[in-house]
Image 1 (tube, rainbow, N blue to C red):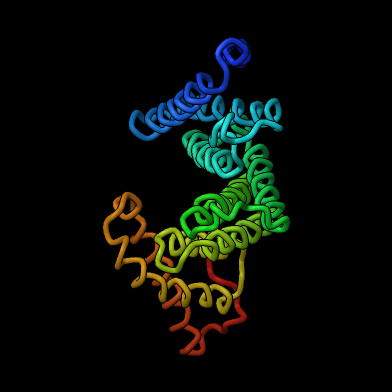
Image 2: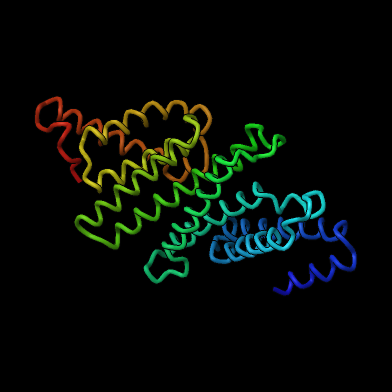
Length: 278
């Protein structure tokens, strides 16, 4: 609240030519600080505070200065910029929750789901209204402001359902795992086929599908898609942070599992209608 008062006071005294660059530097500094705290210092709980601060200021500014031209208030208050920051906030929120998963977490699962759904609604409204400026219709801008934020939102919803399943049992747990699988599949489909996240989220979907008790045929269908994606991924992402973190081990485990089940099907010991053995 203090910075909001200072901004309004400074705007009256010095105008947009002074305030615009100051706001831009401040918001970007918060984002950088948040990323450094989370990824370099291993303190996502601290990093997320800086991203939340940035999101709050951007949303406030968009309301207070909704009739001010972007050339005056600055590009940081445009939909595309805010959407990117909200996407980063979602990822960091998941990481923070994941560092200490609990029903009593300071970052409740329900809040993650709501934030992800709000982001998807915002993207849908923009697409349906077809109001993306022509200057922002290049592939890079579309990917960063629409495609990747949507994928992150679907991934967050998948994460939400898979985590909720851990607090349930029986039918409720299987339903949550199935919902998680559907969300992860949507996230995977949003990325290009040669992106490592396309393959990784297919594998995440298979993890959920196994716990949901889907049929062997359904499980293998995703495995076929994943197997085709791996060579494309490896051309670009053979060495990455995710690869060093066990990406390939996870993927290959699911592919081997599918192969073993289909071998049993071929031997007549199982059928494709049978549920995946847990």
